[in-house]
Amino acid sequence: MRIIAGEWRRRPLRAPPGDATRPTADRTRETLFSMLVSRLGSFEGLSVADLFAGSGALGLEALSRGAANCLFVDNEAAAVRAIRENVAALRAQQKCEIIAGSVMALGAAKIARDLVMLDPPYGTGAGSVALHRLLRLGWIGEATWVALETGADEKVEIAGLEIDAERKVGRAKLTLLRVATA
Image 1 (cartoon, one colour):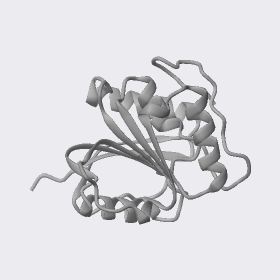
Image 2 (spheres, rainbow, N blue to C red):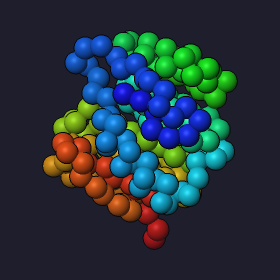
Image 3 (cartoon, rainbow, N blue to C red):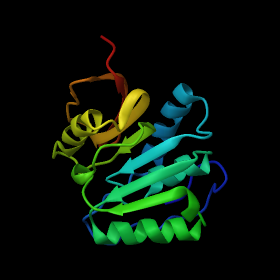
């Protein structure tokens, strides 16, 4: 697993050992960032959240491409260790906040993030539940882009958010969402 583009291009990333975490495949990550670049243009200065972060690959990719900061959240101890190791190897500590805990335990946001990326366990519905909660707590604003990875056959419906784009990549489905316009 490697960073695809930007300042840290080709730098290797450590994945957490064991079966508790399923890192986003390079091909899937490449497709996701291609979808995001076509909408955002640039990641320069963005405030990002990488939730159900696993190795932290999604957030680190955004930082490599110019994001200003990233919050990483995961409740698996091995995943949190991997995120910390990857952040340290890239010397990115100043741009990162790592929370060892559940996405569902996050409190109200001080300010909405520019980009919220979620890669929850497939088939659990955890992404939809988390997004509903994050929307209510101010993590997602009118200008926020949301990227959700689910299993290819999972249906994505979140009250208050509308689908901008969906792409299937192997066993995964990538869904980009925005706040619904009334």
